[in-house]
Length: 200
Image 1 (cartoon, rainbow, N blue to C red):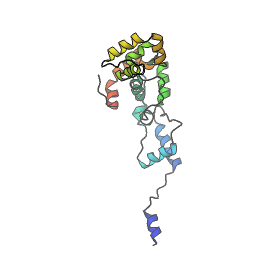
Image 2: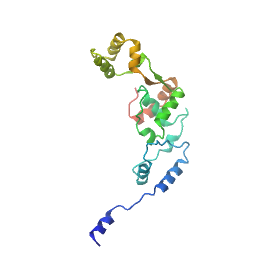
Image 3: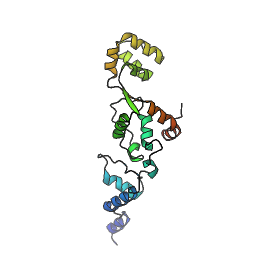
Image 4: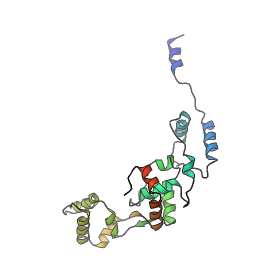
């Protein structure tokens, strides 16, 4: 046996049949109440290879079952995750698609349409800002920074007109409406268990 034959023998020879893997995935998801979302950006070949070699996972069936309130688990998490975030955000954690089978952009729009969420774009947005954000604005405008959020907001409202603040916060942030608040409160244990943040 030649030296090259020896090295060839050591190389992994397993070839993944992607068509077979697609058939397996479709067969598994056929039993799901809803088919998990798959973004156009996903490299399907690479993803299927990870499923075939065991390094990747399929969306668990329980994540595609709607709760008593008609929402998927991923949509419940999404309500909490987008709350008080910039309404133009297009960057979502990959777990929404890969683990919970939802398209977070489309789901956010559906939650807005169904009155779980709203977009707040008036001067009151600054009430949701962190002290760091408030002090950044103060510093950019040559004003002193403050140790408390309340004082920083007070100074901003004194120094700037409501119209100026509205232009500054445009296009606004996502906020939970009453329905959304109810869902986040009802499923707080699930949300915080997954996101690893203690309930307030």
